[in-house]
Length: 108
Length: 108
DNA sequence: TGGTTATCTAACCGTGAGGTTAAGTACAGT
DNA sequence: ACTGTACTTAACCTCACGGTTAGATAACCA
Image 1 (spheres, chains in turn purple, red, brown, blue):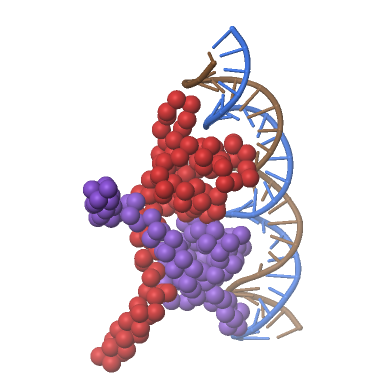
Image 2 (cartoon, rainbow over the protein chains, first blue to last red):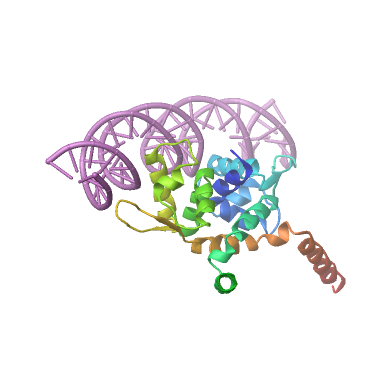
């Protein structure tokens, strides 16, 4: 699976997006991350594994804790990918497109 | 499944992203969209169904054709979501963050 | 040493995703 | 009316996902 697909797949789950949102406030242990969810530990562990494989988090070791930290690097690609479609949803870009089309037609 | 999850899930497949890319050049029939892929018709039909349910394409009817058209509206949400993480990957934002942190520490 | 806490691994389960083939539907052209 | 083209539906297969429980591992604490 390519990087971008892995990133999108990781982001497709609301639990994982919530974990990322929590990590914007700083590192956290697995226990802390699992608090908000009515879900078993292993389930959270699996989500963290998915996020780690997608490169969205990194994990350390401190005694019996495995602190998680956000790594937003893959989101740069997501943002860049979406940007290529901005002109298809952004009204001002649409107007610009229309203007350019009109100019192109007039010059023929 | 919520809208954002559906959008991310739809984008997680490279075939579907390629279809969207093709549709930026204008509407296309199912046959045209399936040309680049070594894949059966029904497989493409399923991908189009996923894209349609995610609101990323709209479909018309013209005789025996079902032309597909890009609708990038859901990508606005994707872009907005990613923007919330920009400061975690963008170097200039990182420097700004560091500066703000330093200022905050100094004023205490 | 024993007990508690944090976390992961293993085995399992139900469901849905992504693919196939075969058959059905709908329209066009002759 | 017949044939071909475009597309969908139905049935099926395989496999990965998201969850579970039970047991293993590792570190701290008394």
